Image 1 (cartoon, rainbow over the protein chains, first blue to last red):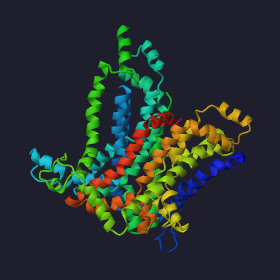
Image 2 (image 1 turned 30 degrees about the horizontal axis):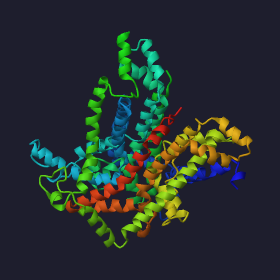
Image 3 (image 1 turned 180 degrees about the vertical axis):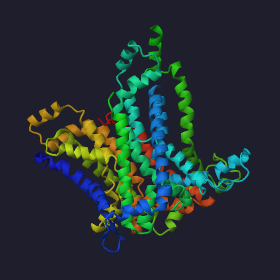
Image 4 (image 1 turned 135 degrees about the vertical axis):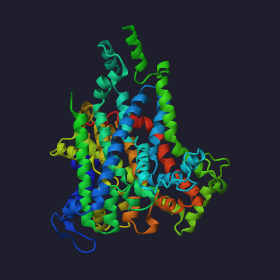
Length: 294
Length: 295
């Protein structure tokens, strides 16, 4: 039978059927549902752009907290995680391979941990009584007099979410960039030094980055996507959705709040569409910035 | 000129031996890596702490007298919950094994077609996949749930597998990798009368082994660690996976001091397979990532 399998369909159909069912249809369904009132029991009722109008004019939680939290979180974790990945990849490329492999495994290992399991560890470290490790250290050093309620107080929760996300931001994009730096043709550097490049900074900007632009681009898209995907962390840390005073509420949590807690699925779909568009446009902007040639 | 030659040697990428000029990099990378390692060291130490050390005040980072108590307690609690531990474990093993195998085949098939076969709409499909690199599954949980529910997949093993194995990133990586293989190999096999499917198994599969290993790891992580399918698509407790059980356990027990050691033990058990697999296959992963660029 294998001898007769020549048609491209044998190769195309399995992946693309699933792609269609679990990527294309859900996106189209989200767009459709976003124009309806749907409570998961009765059939969806078409209500035009009412959901979108409500999102902009009436959903004060979304406008006041969720949107600004998400942007703040994304604009810090995305670019910093990305720069850190590049910098670490570049540094690792400058040391011999045995040491590099060990350090690369250590740096990548946080993204191998299971988010939820790790969240319970963070809860112990940032625990709000004197049993909490961080509180205990700070009390011991005399930096604070009272234990701080790290995970329940709005001013700390977001910072902790950012630190935790940065910790696990050396993922697939980091590996791609590391491979990218290592694969740059050595003779390019030799030629550049002949042509008068003098230091490492020039080397990075004139040779390294242009030579590994494809990997940089891949890394950037991965950074944007994982940043938005990581959104659930606030709920896992504080143990409640909504998070205390909405301090750690991101779009992803807002979708869960309306979709699975309040069963306002039409409205949740509207928020989903906004999220997909946001990821798309942010990726495109990054693409523009990094992708332009010369 | 002599000076710049010297500085070139110092900045050499992928050096073969240690050189004095690498000291600044080590000076940054080693402390930084240790800092990154702290949370993982914490989970390891915590998992082996006896009750007395878990309750100790002030809390200590390192374990003094390591025990397996937390792991024993974990297995005791699981057995007491009605569904035996082995059940969750077998579910996870089964779902992960089938899922990883399927993921590898469907993505490699599609990648081969997009790279080497000729058919209409090929370019469009690749563009669509590149667009899907930006896809955030968490955004469409609700429509996905509705699709699973409507197709009667609730409480089936397929619900654990099918939504998770569509991985645009994996497809992208293998496609870029196959692009590097020379067409002559395929052409000469065709002259010998081999079908496309034979070519795929006999010629392409061995060449793209590193990319397959990479996709295997990515799929393993995605499926082994996944809790959403158990939460959303499965109501039958005996069909849920280990990741789900560990999650409900850590969120229920993690809040009490006594349960913390157990939560750490559970987290460690989930983490170890991922880490081992990555360590074993890391050179293959790096080989694949070299071709990961978006052009």
